[in-house]
Length: 164
Length: 365
Length: 104
Image (cartoon, each protein chain N blue to C red):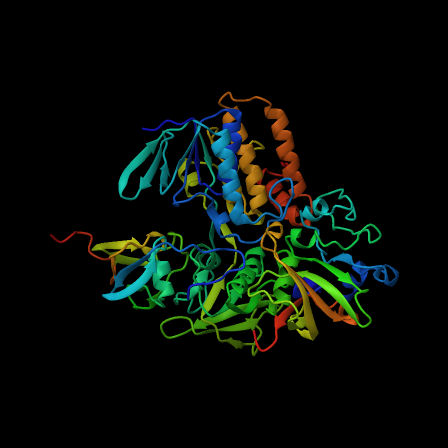
């Protein structure tokens, strides 16, 4: 149970996973926010109207995957660091994940890291494609990792190889 | 004797917001704080705030005092006076405040209206070894890390999985300190689950239904024994785990700092949902003493977002009740709506229930 | 024990100062409290309980709890967690409540 462990259940993750059809079209955001709390910055972050208007500030954000183009502007705006952009069209075997990462040191481009899941367990090897750390991101850098396609909805952070 | 129109005790989020609201109505405000800088607990909050983007959501706590102070500089020209390094010691029968200024002469202040925004203090947890150096309150850990840039230790056991326990654990990781585990006596995580998810993916275990049996160490903390609890909150025999840590951080709840309110003679009631003894107050944030108002954690333990809106309401009415009442109904409606929004979900339900009990069954804002 | 690099905060240390603790030289930075500076120098035991002499460190770090009282420049019962460190401060651990009648 999420309320006991802090780890979202597979059914909860499944509910917010875009359709295979949509995943084949390009990058798209997923928001792993499952609790009704008063919070709405994601709504204001999206320039494409892809996050549906809330009736009440405690509503869960719902992303219209058809309107979302995976630009990732919402990633660093979420105070819960709960938004990720996944791109299943990156390569034959690989996909891309863009994630918020607020630790130091930031990894370097092309660095090999270990992708870890929401329990902090290593899932697979991952390659750092890009690290964004502009002033606009207000100290929430966004790291893009390339991972095997099947792990796009599992890898949510990473640790450096060789003991961190 | 100083005689400001409004004196505000406490320059944290509630006090700063009250000051801004009051000067915008046209009143003269003296804001008194015991620290060398304004901001209260905000100066330690490195994370992005929740709530509404219209307020301070997605802005880091550490950046909020600067914004409020800039607004006060602009809107409070000639009307706003911050008084720092000054501790209010008493609020006496004749409405006089005594304030201590360390090496300087003490101050006597007789304001027309007073807003108490003194926040809350950390609760202690009794267990053998809880007096060992290395057992720190969560606020102390934040102060060391985020104000002075000093690591509290190498490996921490966090007690409490409310928002403070979860957030401070994340901040410890950001400071390069290992967190061995977060333990929580209740069967569920009390804080926002997105905070819990963040620390879980950093590899920090969260053990609900667990508590600390004892802390041990020669001159300071060297370790702790934790154990699991059954559904009656009793220790399960044989479930002890030895955690090798050098810091035990207590994040086990806050109690409103109501000393000045007791001394002033405000009516207070014990309401567990609101954090303990809290003052009776009406929708204007006015206590049972008409010249005394409250806002923030001293009024009820909640979030910085609601503290700021309560501050706005208290400041609005402290000013309006002195005659500075332009557009007061309009402003109040907008503030009340914000507060209602913030308290509209499941997390706000507990507060609303507590407020209802405080007012004897009559639900207020 | 000082944090060199932090992902959110840029710690701008004040100018270096030095003070003594129980006659030991300690380096600190202006802007730190005595308790913070001692902690950075590895000093965690700040006092002892009056009867059983159990070691005590700080607890609240904001001047509420009285766990950190020390003698500073001859004055007893100073809350070092809210006292800024100054060049040349003479800080000493105190036993018990300290003398409140100043010696001539």
